Image (cartoon, rainbow, N blue to C red; front, side, top):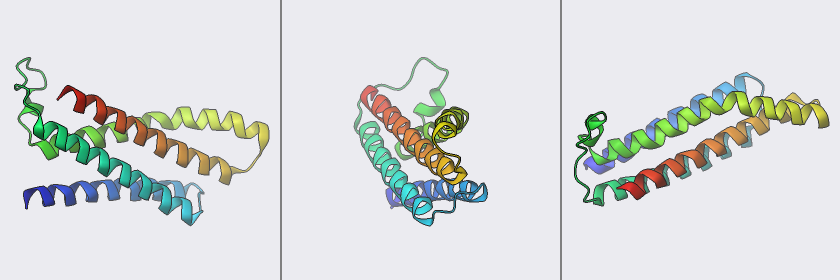
Length: 147
């Protein structure tokens, strides 16, 4: 039952994050309903599979507890919470850090080829979501391989 509640909590967190991101992009002019629903669904699937992978890797690891200090509070957390933090924090940090870079790159590309703000917002939404999901997956693989 505890694993199910952790799963529901993680899915709820990811849904809320994706809803907020979609509302933000809708408010700045992205109105394509299919994009605003299908891309977040894909990201939710990727983040959930990352979470399952990492929870399984951390839960089955036989490594000793963290004796170096510093992040010892993380070693005392339960496996679902650890894996949730790794996935959600890596996704959110990479998404927020990518916004200026994605915006400047796409501004440069789209001012050469087109003047459509809707297309620029579409690609900004798609790139930032997908790149953040990939970074989150890489974080899960790195942390999982160390367990």
